[in-house]
Image 1 (tube, helix red, strand yellow):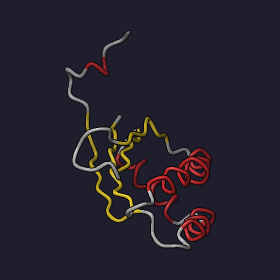
Image 2: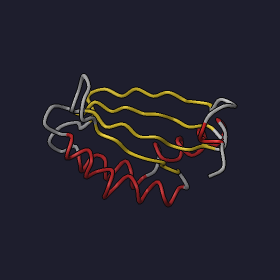
Image 3: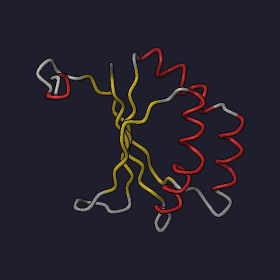
Length: 111
């Protein structure tokens, strides 16, 4: 299993709109496509309080490529994204890392 950590810097004043889009639009589409979000965060302390961080779980890079490609070309996503950006884009900048757990990671230990 691999994880993808994504950071979206929202357009100034649009973080709540971005959160709403995830809640109401993105998550249902991901559920339909089989994309597995792990968690979402905003920052209490740090260089920006206008960022959204989230973690996705993938079985492999091949799965990521296949499902992310399906998402980006999904007709409902394209239509709904355009609707949510009538007043301008919600994400000013995006970053992502694809991460692999180390063999000593606490996440691998049974509880």
